[in-house]
Image (cartoon, rainbow, N blue to C red; front, side, top):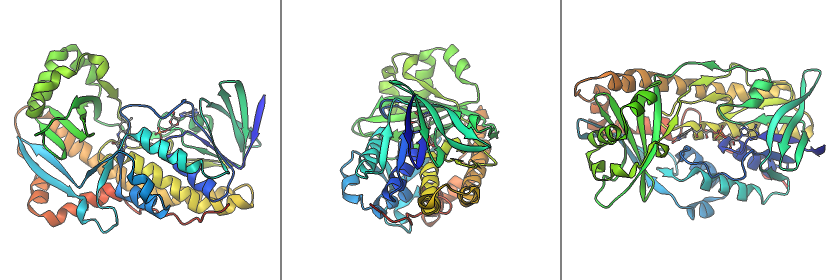
Amino acid sequence: MNTVTTRLCIVGGGPAGMMAGLLFARAGIETVVLEKHADFLRDFRGDTIHPSTLDLMDELGFTERFRTLPQRRVEHLSGVVGGRSYRVADFSRLPTRNRFLSFMPQWDFLDFLADEAGRYPAFRLIRRTEARDLIEADGQVLGVRAEGPDGPVEIRSDLVLCADGRHSRMRDRAGFTPRAFGAPIDVLWFRLSRRDGDPEAAAGRFGPGRILITLDRGDAWQCAYVVPKGGDAALRAKGLPAFRDAVAQIAPFLADRTGEIADWDAVKLLTVTVDRLERWHRPGLLCIGDAAHAMSPVGGVGINLAIQDAVAAANLLAGPLRAGPVAEADLARVQGRRMFPMRATQALQRVIQSRVIAASLEADAPFRAPLALRILDAVPLLQVLPARMIGMGVRPEHVRVSARA
Ligand SMILES: Cc1cc2nc3c(=O)[nH]c(=O)nc-3n(C[C@H](O)[C@H](O)[C@H](O)COP(=O)(O)OP(=O)(O)OC[C@H]3O[C@@H](n4cnc5c(N)ncnc54)[C@H](O)[C@@H]3O)c2cc1C
């Protein structure tokens, strides 16, 4: 049995785990991140980097290097109803330094964080290694048992951060069960080419019985087709030509290329889950990111919240960790700080899911744009409110912990 001893073991190299790994290692805390995959190359993941995360890149001194990554800047979001576009969010008015969303493949962002973290001697990323179980004694978590390419490995640490996503195995092993809120929708993801003359902005298109979100990925549109919960099977049963027609009806500018959806393998189902843990910690263990709270795709804020959790954890725990094992009260402070922003965001997402999204999917005839959309479009100053909620969130975090060799 191969044994690694470290101060902090982070399970999962997603946005939460990589950001936490970077910040703790930068603070001089010996950190091991376990990632079960060999690379970060997973398609149809969240690809939005929000102003609050861009601000963090500046705070960490990454501005110049971050700008060299391929990315698309988006300053406005719109909703299209009955063929008319309504502007709903204006990021250019945000009271912050980075007044836009950056669309960037998540693997580029994670590779970037891994490169930056790798500059610190205290950082170690172990890929192709899957955490399988916790090491415990007398109710205290002492590390994890994992399986790597060369067989079993034990990571012994003062603290385990579970950042292993919405299907977190470590959360289950810790005895935690998330409270699920149900979601009335699922999302089908696919890609269509982007051509000269296409509309510029990222937009949500609403029509009777269908919604399509189009995200600008440079040479392609990443498309999210929203279906009622469990509606995927019925949609597939109607056949691919019917699906292509439905896409063309809701976004006529895509009609000339829906044939690019060659088969159903090109259409990936995201089962939407909204859940959260009521308790994120046990002695020696803390859950963050999707492992603590799976967010609805409304607003595309999952990455942002995962990163904010990581920053709060580093701010509150780096000091205590330097001194030795962390008291559970310190872990509770992280949950205490992040619980309200997460709850407020989920509450808003659930209202939008049921009032706007489900209502559109249930409609069987063309409908007027909701009043809120019309007001936002008519009063540009108000567009900063949704931009603030999406781009900065409730209680944005800042890097408070300083770098140490
Ligand atoms: C299809 C899709 C589209 C989305 N679109 C957006 C969007 O546009 N904007 C947005 O903000 N959010 C979006 N999200 C949500 C966003 O991706 C998540 O909220 C965010 O990635 C959560 O980060 P995380 O680090 O907590 O978890 P994850 O990103 O899920 O990362 C968890 C990591 O842990 C690894 N792992 C899991 N189990 C183990 C184990 N036992 N041992 C070792 N490693 C393990 C996984 O391989 C993974 O790399 C989307 C999600 C999906 C699925």
